[in-house]
Image (cartoon, rainbow, N blue to C red; front, side, top):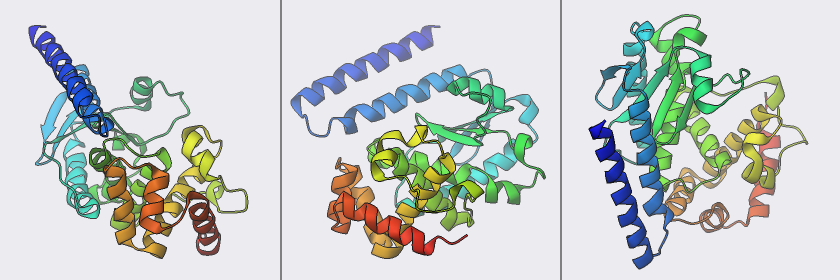
Length: 283
C-alpha cells in the first residue's frame, strides 16, 4: 500500500511540474502532458494486473493467466518478430520495454473496455499498453508462424510506436490506416470482407475525422483508412508519408501536415485518394 501511495504522490508532483513548465513555455503543450497521461495509464494497468504471471523478452514484459502459460512464449516470439520491422518502418526507437497483456477470453477483455459482447477484437492498444486476446480463443491451429502472420502484434505495436512518436497528435483514421499499412508491408496481411469493397458510397474525410469509431460500416472505414495512407505512400512516395508523420510529431494538425507534405489542401487530398482507391482497389 505504501508503494502505491508513493507512486501516486510522485505522479502528482510530476503533473504539477509539467503544468509549471507549460505556463513558462506554452509551445505544443500536448507533447508535455500526453506522455505523462500515457505513463499514468501504464502505471495503473501494471498495478491492476500485478497478480498475473510475468514473462519477459528483450523488448516486452508479458503478463498472462496460468491457463495461457502454454502460449506465452509463442506470443513473445511474435512480439519480438514485430519489433524491429515496425521500428524500422517508422524510423524510431523506444527506451523501455513494452507492457503486453494476454486475456484468456473475450469477456475479460471486453469488460476492461466496456465493450458489448459483439466486439471481436484480437488486440487493442491504449495508454502505452498492448492488450491481446489469447490466440487459443481464435487461432484454429496454434502455430507460431500463423500467429505471427495473422495475429495483432505488428498492428498494435505500430499503434504504440506511432503514439510515442507523435504524443497522441493524430486522428483515429490515420493511426488505423498506418497500422494496417505497416502490417501489410511486414506480413502481407489485409482485412478484406464483402462489406469493405470500395464503391461510390465511401465515407468522406469529415466522417472519418470526427466519427471514425461510430461509423456503421467499420470494415469499410478501416479499408478507407488503409487506402488513404497507401495513396500517400504509393502515389506521393514513402518519403512524403514520413513527412506527414514528422509534421504530426511537431504538433501540426492533420490538415496542415497533408498540405505541407503533399502540397494538397484537404479537399484535394480527399478527392485524390478516393479516386485512386476506386481505380486501384480491386477485390
